[in-house]
Length: 195
Image 1 (cartoon, one colour):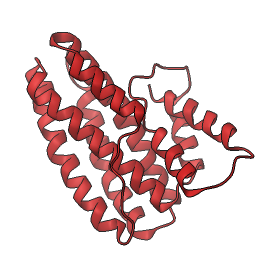
Image 2 (cartoon, one colour):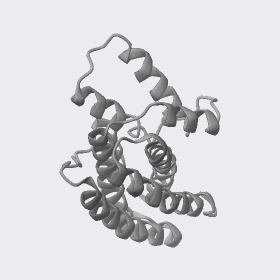
Image 3 (cartoon, rainbow, N blue to C red):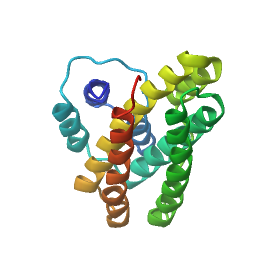
Image 4 (cartoon, rainbow, N blue to C red):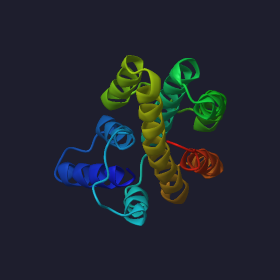
């Protein structure tokens, strides 16, 4: 699942060669990099994905938009899980996600200063929400867990990448302080029994 980011990042890097350099293109590229929480493993390594994420620096606006959309997706999907999940462990995790990503959104807005983060989910994030809305029972639990693993892997790579090579000090601090929280979420997901 982590390798999906590498595949997307590589595709976007190749596609952007020779393309006009606009702020909107950069924001869309970086927002899309976290967009595919249902993508399968394409055989790439976790280290390669993390290296690709760090090798492609984001502008402050693109990072803020990516983080805001990620939080919006996490909150929306987790609110669904609070209502629909069958697993008590998953339901508890979802409650924590709503709390933590709401706090992350507030911290992002504060760190962004004059930048206004755009929390609009991209098409793939919205499609994943739609899939969760349509799912029920054990299928919902599996879909939510799978989406959360992928989304947190991508969010972690984005935070670590921006913390290392970002262009705004306040947002770099936000990214470096948020990365361990995301890693904690990922550790919880990886430790869930029967998922």
